[in-house]
Length: 86
Image (cartoon, rainbow, N blue to C red; front, side):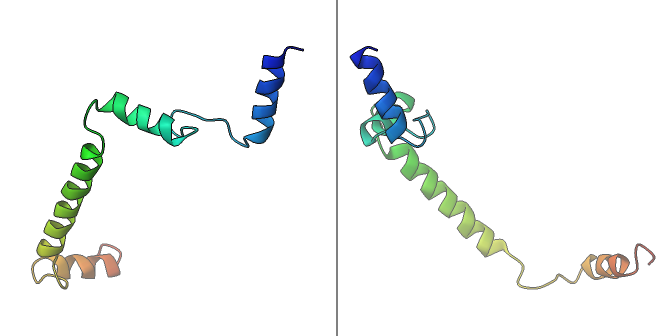
């Protein structure tokens, strides 16, 4: 058995799960994947996604109804309680 094969077998025994593209083996591999996906941007895409998500959540909270509205929703609640018989 070659030395290279023994080294590969030892590495397989030590790592419970082999590295995959979604879970890189090291920080360097992860950084390489980020650099390949967005060359020269580094943390910028992640930061941008976090800011956009936070803005969408704030907009959702601002427009959220504090209680059940007074329009048709009362009628729809009654219909649901009576199995569709209004």
